[in-house]
Image (cartoon, rainbow, N blue to C red):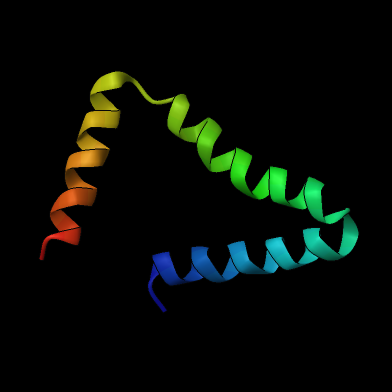
Length: 60
């Protein structure tokens, strides 16, 4: 398994545990809030680079 696959499987497992352990709205807030906070923590140049790479991968 590649590293990205391991991260995705771990994320799904954590998400399912959160949905069982917390109310659905709190789990949703955490699941959406963590990536948003990580994106906002990037420098403007890093955000541009991330958008450029994402667009290039979509246009294959």
